[in-house]
Image (cartoon, rainbow, N blue to C red; front, top):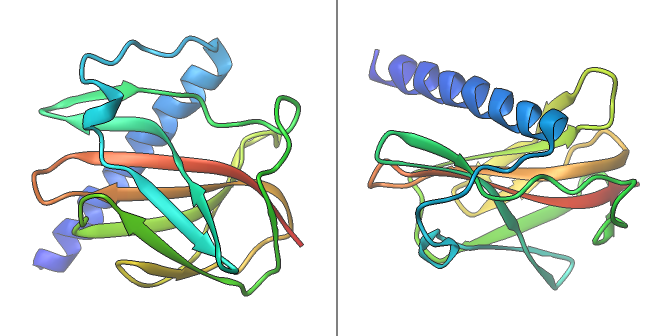
Length: 157
C-alpha cells in the first residue's frame, strides 16, 4: 500500500510539473525563483566517459513549484551530444535523492511525447529511446521533500 501511495504521489507530481513546463513553454515566461539557483541540488550525467551538467528547469520546495529555466528546444540550440539507443548513463547528484525518474521528452511534437527510460538504480539508467532529438529529463525527489527536474537536449541515434 505504501508503494502504491508513493507511485500515486510521483504520478501526481509528474502531471503537475509537466503542466507547468508546458504552460511556461507556451507562454515563454519563466517564473522568478525566490530560492537562489545555487541552493538547488546539481546533477551531472556521465555518458560514454563524458560529463554533462544538467539544467534545472522546475524546483519544488516548501509547497511551491517554481520554473527556473525553460527546456532547450531544437530550433534554439543544438543537441549537447549524440548517444545510441541502449547506452547507459550514470548520474552524480550534489545531494543524494530518494527517488529518480528518467524520461526522453519531445516538446516540439504537436502533443508533447514523454517516454520513460529504464532506471536501474538511484544513480544509473539506460536510454532505451525512441531515436530523435529529445530532452533528456531527470526528475529527482530529495529526502527533505524537495523536487527538481533537470533537462539537456540530446540526440538519440
